[in-house]
Length: 194
Image 1 (tube, rainbow, N blue to C red):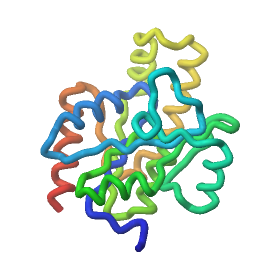
Image 2: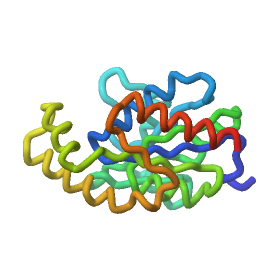
Image 3: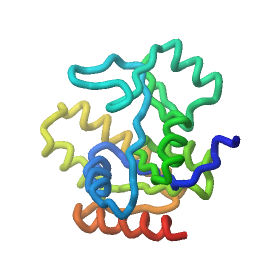
């Protein structure tokens, strides 16, 4: 069986940090009519207190993760820090789509492009962007979770990631959250109907 043969569809949501991607996904998950199931990522990091394997993440050893990379088992993966990997297993996508559900994925820009390249017309890539880089900086400052040096790194990374926006199927500006959620929902609804 070809690993890219699926019954459900894939929705890849990517965005720079601080753009509201997770909030939008959480709102979409409440829409039963979309038949969405969130894709559980695999990681080499250790579980945090209360996290469960197969619920929060698939927790893999470094050797196991690397072996699965060599065997082509990932739809996308990234070594975020030395020895710290995150990725989406093709088997996770197959698990969800074989139930006739649609997969929604929260992945970085490079991961989103990898999934789209692998699954083609079965996947829709949606890029969430801030109204402006200045607006993004203000949002990150108002969170008060990072120091200014970390915020500057995130803003610089966001500026780089925004150069990939034209490689995505759709772009939604998150200026007003409710409006952005409705736009993404409409895009997903249309794609499911195709």
